Amino acid sequence: MAESIKKVEATREFRMKQTMPRLTAAEKSEILKKFHPDYKGGSTRALAVGPSKGSKVPHEFADIFESYSLITPENFNISKIDFDVDVLIIGGGGAGAAAALSAQENGARVLLATKLRFGDANTMMAQGGIQAADKANDSPAIHYLDVVGGGGFYNVPELARVLVIDAPGIIKWLESLGVMLDKEKDGSLVGIHGGGTSRKRMHSARDYSGGEIMKVLRDEVTNRNVEVIEFSPVIELLTDGRTCTGAVLYNIETEEILIVHAKTVILATGGSGRLHVQNFPTTNHYGATADGLVIAYRAGCRLLYMDTIQYHPTGAAYPEQILGQLVTEKVRGLGAHLCNREGNRYIYELETRDVESAAIIRECLERNLGVVTPSGQHGVWLDSPVIDITNGAGTTVKQLPAMYRQYMRFQIDITKEPILVYPTQHYQNGGIVINESGETDVENLYAAGEVSGGVHGRNRLMGNSLLDILVFGRRAGAAAAKKSKFVPPGRLAIEHVKKYHKELQEVGVEKVRFSPMMLPDYRRKEQKKSPVPVV
Image (tube, rainbow, N blue to C red; front, side, top):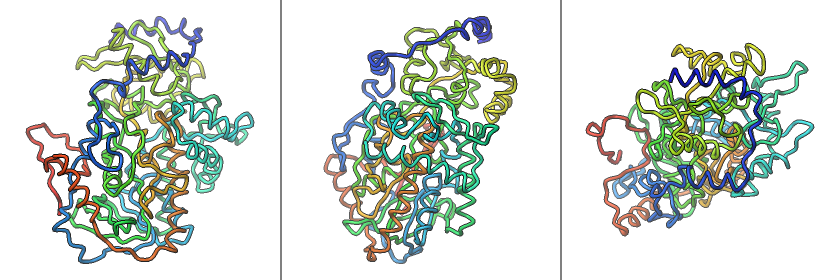
């Protein structure tokens, strides 16, 4: 590794004079089909049951969908209701918080339930920024073209449209709440490029943008006295056979079952990185185990694009203590080069994430020009010292303080040394089918954020996830609150679980897998215990 770093340093002056060509559409298609993990043979299978039966998904998803409930429906007795509200929001990240604020603003009695602590979510870990077309040389129409181009033209048009149209208003809303975004000397918002963008519309709070947004939203929810239950993940939805009427929560501290009756329910449970599709490391927080997908699917919600995962091209590959941790795209947005072990650039650094990831995998596994760590981890160099050389001394520490401190913990000064990176599981491109208001196939059930599908097509651009959770969180919150005023009390039952179990039995699925997972199990194989129903 030390010898390779010397080559990176030796080629730096030459590389800074280079202009890397963009790939053609045909070249992008070829590299994706050959090297992106989504195209790896044998990595998916068709679902045997449920409303999206026949759709191909990674084996890790199929395993949790083709599993039995943590509730034994024949023995489950709803003897009392613990909470009775207008709107139940399941999930304590940015989408859940935005939905809670919006629902309360529209006159609803709101309960927010979250698996871990309020704010323990991927939102808190988002670094790079949030997109919005609010500059003179930009427009929502141009933003829209970037979104659908980056998504491979698979985006649901109506969802992409509202994403970009609502974006400028979301920025104004954040600032009105007190979110401190980076500003120029004249007070205007700083804008930088992200991968796949044609305009500088990325707004950020240094490299802790998600943390800044989440802390403000969490404080706002607290200050408005929205009721919040922590450490209580959802394990099943309740329905009357046609509409969603509430949910079953499980307090992981007290092991109590909590029954919530709600006129409307919003799923904001986030993603699934902790399933570790194809054994990739992940940038995701500890609770990202696809719980919302599982319970929504059992209740009758269709899924979209679940065969595609976003692998962030620059996950930490060294040191191993932070394997898979996010190295924000903002590092490349500020000018850092991707280099192989000979110190040579091999791709334009701001191609879309799927293309960048495929190119890194190609460099390491086909061309054999990657770096291999003492533990056998592959990677390529991200030449971060170029940032200060290009933009002036101190730029890295000012613009990327979290990244700088992260590596200094291991005595790696990213202003002087390159970073070793490799793709890491980052985002769930697919999810529950929704409309512009977040409505799902099941009446009175809504979804917002990463748990939903269609907004980003088959590949998300940087900065559109923080935008997505806020746009659709607020839309779902408003729609659910307004709908709740006209919803009569519904019967609390789990007949849909019995029906789903029957489907599993009919196709021969043995009763050995149970879901949702709730929390990942990282013990050695011989130490793991098979999950069993909690009630």
